[in-house]
Length: 419
Image (tube, rainbow, N blue to C red; front, side, top):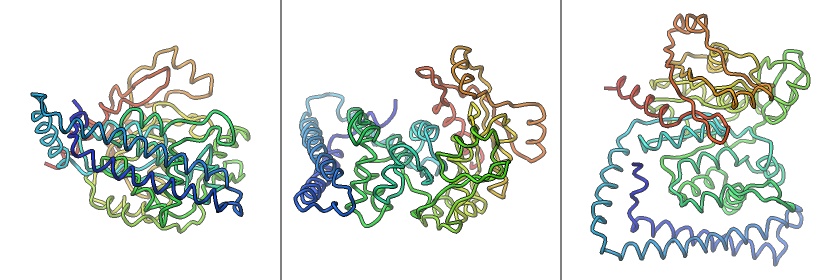
């Protein structure tokens, strides 16, 4: 059983109290902004009521969960209460001694993997791309001049120790009005950014409030934009536009780059990479989620210089407009090209995909990523070990990686190499 199910109530009280203090700060800030029309010049008055609303919600959650924690703490009649505490503390000590894992990327695939990894170690650092400019994140980025919170939000929730209702709340998307399509979790990060000195500090506060296992870090705090040069010579600006325009022009991606080209990485991110036991790239979109992190020179260099094992997890399916026709070897070569260094392992799914699920994806132009004998031979010549397995997990007709199987194999691999 996951040790997070054995959470000592007394340890929660302090966290709920802190959440209440944050809620009060949001409520005061939002109310002040409304009364004094603080955001009129920026044409963002619509966000003032939202900040106020966030504060009220946080206070409500804090009061409810805090009282439940106190009641549970005082209820000593349960005969197995001490056993639960001892088991939780024992398992927590085990996880605290787990391997130091750094995961680099972004998108849904990465957050899925993180949910598996936290069952094996508490020493997890997720370094997330901030090149996203689409959806709710793109709107907040344009309106508030902040870094995109979407991928960071998903990874924080994957590693967080939250109640189910809290996770549903943070993932909730408004269905109408000016906030239609916007995620409540994105707004929470935006509000935290508003009361913090910078985005880095805001993310650290969110990590603390949601009791994140390990830490989630942006790859840089600079406002970077992703570009792609297509094989037909056209240059596309913006992460969200790259696959769309590549399909429109029926031209593959020749190379990707960022502006500013000399964006500085977060110091803490490079420090974590240098001290890691294993560095995992992916799963996720090759050119729009993984490689953008390697375009930040300090991150690329740290990965190459680190003594950690380097692992690349390939996607199960190709992505239309981004990796059409790519094999495992093509994906791996792209990683090596931008890393300017080698990797140690490539994880490949060899489980057959059910036809009814596959049909849905092929209609959109995606196909299973090929792994041929030539791929195997070329990767062996590059001294890269291929780990094949049944890494498929299908939920509600969506193809995902089996995070538990992947995490278990990676941790075993690291421990075997280390000891």
